[in-house]
Image (cartoon, rainbow, N blue to C red; front, side, top):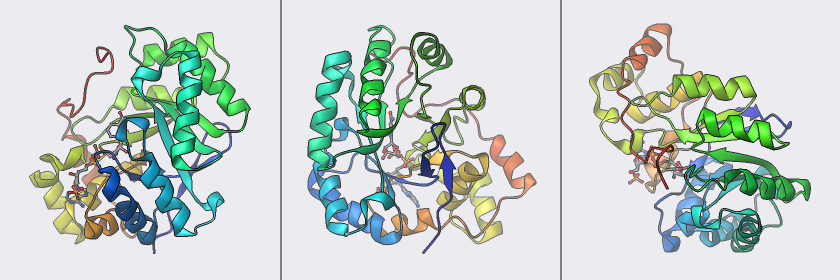
Length: 275
Ligand SMILES: NC(=O)c1ccc[n+]([C@@H]2O[C@H](COP(=O)([O-])OP(=O)(O)OC[C@H]3O[C@@H](n4cnc5c(N)ncnc54)[C@H](OP(=O)(O)O)[C@@H]3O)[C@@H](O)[C@H]2O)c1
């Protein structure tokens, strides 16, 4: 079983650099899928209120028998629950569904700048953190302007910014901006949702050279960039394949080739306009 490296977040909390995402896993399949991931060695699980599978995730965690302190559980506040009081209530609901007394990381899912509620929502997350019910708090899909406002108008710098990041959307500027503030960058859709990039000749060529799969090459690229990464798969063989990325290394030539794959194409919405 692989030993997964950890990153130290800006409040000293340690987070596995590779975790498991459960977006689009139906609630009735979540228990089995998360159990497969835990069996394969993942200890960090990324869910969200939006995914409607917090209860299945929580059951799988409880039944695994793995001590709570060895797990790292992330969930997220959905858009309709932004605002100070709504966020506090939504957090209670998530915790109850997960069957936990705390999460390791709680994120604001989207900034929704046109609604302008993310600063007051962040104040609610600061309260949740102060109460010890989230060991770390962070954001998702935040652009530099949104992070700047939080820095100016609140007390805690987000521990994490979870953003769309894959070889087609490499997010060089945002990664640098995050790093400058001490915010860890976490990549969502790290495989580009299995869309195209896994059959790109650059990726398949590097995969052949190392005797690895295209998904392993892409995940290894993330790890070497320093990203936290949360691939999703509902397929047991792929779940195992995606965690087996610590026994090889991309060289400078591979990394330069990966750098050419940027097209700026998103698989998800644009955070500046998504509402
Ligand atoms: N914060 C946000 O706004 C946000 C948005 C989207 C996602 N996320 C998080 O990020 C996680 C990952 O993103 P994602 O699920 O969108 O995309 P992803 O992990 O990039 O890709 C998942 C897709 O790739 C396929 N796949 C997985 N491993 C593979 C492999 N080894 N070979 C070939 N295909 C493979 C999966 O198929 P099978 O499942 O059929 O195996 C699935 O269709 C989510 O689960 C969620 O936790 C966050």
